[in-house]
Image (cartoon, helix red, strand yellow):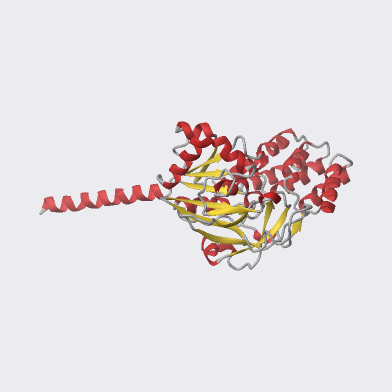
Length: 379
């Protein structure tokens, strides 16, 4: 009887240990490999990396085609192909790299997120070097350069399950920069599920036809063999208040719990109108940019105007350097706008600005902004 009692407790201990191991596995750090060499836009790489840092359980790093082929990226749970050029993404992978990615997804159960150009790379499009992992093909490639801006999208019922924070909103907004127009692939073993639908008609570039982007898929997910893919036509990773959508998709693809994120980063209410960059608006944007090199007052106004008009990627390139301006008012304004925009890649720049500040009252104000900026990172 005594031995049975000991056996019972040992059994309980083993079961408890197994449960702990299972829990640890569920909460284990997710490794995301961001394809970051030939084919990827620098700002898109930064935006993807910084968006992934919102999630404390995601560990992002930049990987290359060599890493994929050599096995150095075999530990990656989810691959991410950022904006840039879809043709260059697959061209840089080469035939062997493409095959390796396909096998890692379909046979090993990995995931892939394709953003903008990355979504192109996941398609199976006639006369286009895609991976064929989304069940979609891209159309109207001859008008690929159709325009950009802050566009409207709505969630499907399937999308609301993955992004419940947006359930009560009929219209959402996100940056878009000439992403693919997707339709179901003509003959495919994979069928995608639409999570979000584009509601904007983008054709601001001369010669691009109207009606191509309207009511087309904005976000899709696809089961491919043992793995999953997600294709994102726009740029939530570059949209303040919406960047959290990318780590959420990563969790979904990896089969992990869809945890909530802080209200500091879940801020869809920041955007309430469509902004499409016509030639006239681009001229205004360029005038604001030139004002960044003029008087203090003109700099202050230009920074705010660029932010208000949703001028990605000019904002990313030119607001952070204003932390190094001669005028404290400009430096503080830049810090405040960097926080508003969630530009966490500017943390080191803001730290330096704090350390160089001689006036203690000024330093305190910059330190306050630094704490706010650091709070966007998952801890």
